[in-house]
Structure formats: C-alpha cells, structure tokens
Length: 265
Image 1 (cartoon, rainbow, N blue to C red):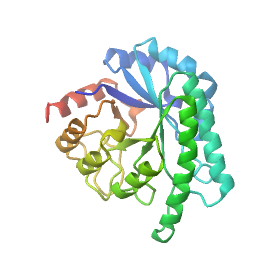
Image 2: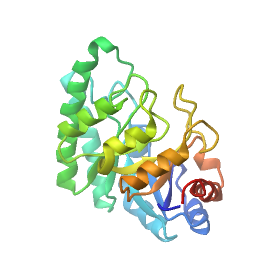
Image 3: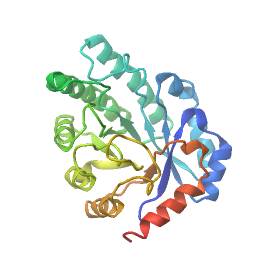
Image 4: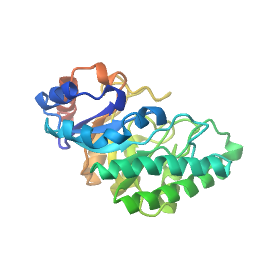
C-alpha cells in the first residue's frame, strides 16, 4: 500500500499485547479512538504511558478521535450556548492531554443528529462557531484539527457542507471517512477536499447507511478512491475503522491493504 497501514483502536481495547501483534503484522500507526467522554476520560491521564507502550512495539499513535457521546452533552451544533461551550471545554481538555503526549492530530465530528432540513442552516452555523473555538484551542496546543465528513442528517454530510465548514474554520483540515457519504460520490468528495485531507477512516458500506465493513465486503469503488487520493497528493495513513476491529487479527488489515493495492498500484 502506498500509504502506511493504520488501525483505529478504542481506548478500552488498548493493550501492549495488541501493539505487539501490530508490530508483527507491520502496522506502524494507529488512531486512539473513544466514542464517549467516559471512555477517553479513563485513559486521559495515561496517554503518555499508552504512547510509550505503543512505541515500544514501533507503533505511533498518529491521531486521537475526540468523543461524540453523549450527544446531548457535547454536540457542537446544539442550540444552547452552555452546551456548545461544554463541547469546546471538554474537547480542549482532551486536546491538551493528547498534545502533551505528542499526538499531532485530533479528529472531530462536526455535529450530532438528527436534524431536520428546516433547522439545518441554523445548526450548521452553531457547529462552525464551536469548531472555530476548538480550532483555536488546537492551534495553541500545536495540534491539527481534522473535521470528519458524516452521514445521514449530521453536519458535513455532503461536499457543499464540508467545503463550507472548512472555509469557515480557518486552519482546520479534514478526515475523510469512506463509508459516510450517502449523497456525493467518494472520489469526487476526495478530489474536492484535496489537500485538506490529512487523515482517513477506511471501511466499506452499501450506500444506504454507514456499515464499517472491511473493504471488499461492500460496494465502494476502491480503485476510484485510491486514484483520487493519489491524484490529490494525500500523504497520511490508510487508517482502518471497521466493526469489531479489536477482535480481528492484525494481519487482516495488512492483507486487505495488499489486496486493495493490486487494484491500482
């Protein structure tokens, strides 16, 4: 694979044994992810120890995925000012800990859901306001903020919204998820965002909803996706974010990457 293979690892699943398995499978990067504030909170004061344990096995924690649960407490598009402020405050604390541990990228969701079309413009404005504040905090920490494209009624669900968000949040980048676009074609999405993409979440789906399947188990045009990333000069990792990733043998990911590589390179 042209790009280094990486795997999203939930904080609760992190172990030195898993890092040893990554080393044996020649996986050199990972993203530390946590769906909830509680999950990341449990390891927040140990991020430096986790980083050292990973590096012992030649694995680098390249990015941290900021939490998005509970929705009602940390939604950047919430109507209530106090809740948007809580989003910024909570995520900034995580940014500071990640930066202190030497992690360089933070992936963030631009909203929760569901949202109606009638309130969409209003909610997008709130999301942009919150993300601007978070981007300022990331810059102070020396981290790069990567805003992820999302599915269904979330903010950032299509090319138009992602471009609007990135243009409004100066200094922010993008994390492109290959199983979230339910409106626009993935290769077109990638070409439009271009050099703004500094991280990926790689998985497959059926174009009906996100599924987080292993590439090849869904309907994605992998040749088109790989070609678009190549043409736009992407230099990040090929980061797998698939269902039950923690229970899959690490070699599954390197073998899958080699299979995909044959479609293009």
